[in-house]
Each structure stands twice: as C-alpha cells, then as structure tokens.
Image (cartoon, rainbow over all chains, first blue to last red; front, side, top):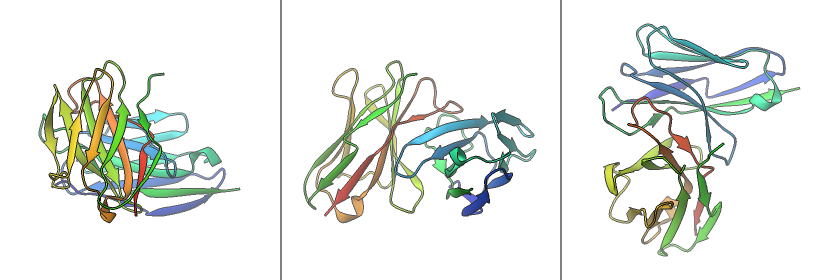
Length: 113
Length: 115
C-alpha cells in the first residue's frame, strides 16, 4: 500500500519568514495533491502535481514534484497568519481507475507575529 | 463557487445508536466519497460511490456502515450501531470526472462523538 510521510510534523514560523514542508512516498507518485486543513474544518485544495519535475505556484505557495516522483515539497514565501493550519499531501496509487486518495501524516503550521 | 455541504456539523450519540451523516455533493459531480479522521490521526478513505453503487471500500467500511444516494442531491453515510471508536471527523467529497488525477472537493466535515 502507498505510504506518505510528511516532515516536519509541526512547524512554528515567525510571520514573514519562508518555510518548506516535505512529503515523501514509499512508491512512485502518479498524482500528488496538497490540501490545507484548518482545525476542525474541511480540506481546501491547493495544488495537484503529476509530472516529474513539475512546479506550480499559487500566490505565495509553490509546490514541486521531484524527477523521480517520490518526493514533493511545499514552499511558502513570506508567511502570513492566514497560512496557519495543517498541510496534507495526498496521492493516488500507481494504477489507473483507483479512487482512493491516501493522505500523509500532516504538518501543523503555526505562524507567530 | 459550488461547494460540498455536510450536516450536521456536530453529532453526539450514545454507543449502539444509529447515525446518519448527510452530504450534498456539488451538483454535476458523479463520484462521491466518505473519509474519516480520528483526532490526531490521518485522513482515511472509507468508501467511494459511483453510478448508484459502491465502487471501492476500505477495510474500515464493515457491515456497520452503509451509503446511499436517496435522491438526486443527497449522499448519506449510515452507521448502524455506533462504537466509541467511531468518534471522528467524517468528510464527504465529490469529483466530476474519472477520479484519478482530478480534484476531489471536500466538505467541511461532521464531527461525530460517540459516548
């Protein structure tokens, strides 16, 4: 089965600083998603990556998928209080037609003034 | 912007009671899912539903669980006889096309507390 490990588990960052969250897969990733979850709330879609070496940006958040498609990173530039929350990576298993999204362990991000 | 909605936001029940969690997926979506998240743990897949039948389910989704799309808009998760370990946040999700490589839109969740 597909396992996703995220690091760090929690992160406390001063407002305005940059940060990076990593997601590592035990198997080749065929589609990697990043979601954000505020405590007690639903999951908000951030980005999806499919191709090795792919990089996408939205506002101050950039996500990359490595060439081997086993690791992804999420980078936030000039962090703001609105970035606080739990970041989850999610992945499809490596065969078409399966509908089960497997999630990582999550990274809890706290932004301090 | 269309969104997935879930009711209730919080459900408290006694062990052994039946609960029904309700979801209204995005209107033109065809694939529907339930996930759960026990406090402090990963979000886990429970079941996927397409064309009025279960297309995939996890080992968590045993005989105590059932799903239904009773009309054109609602998608429900029923737990027949709740256990303490069913306490969790339950998320409904939907997607439009073939799920692989397409975004699943998640609802805000229902927090189920079993006493």
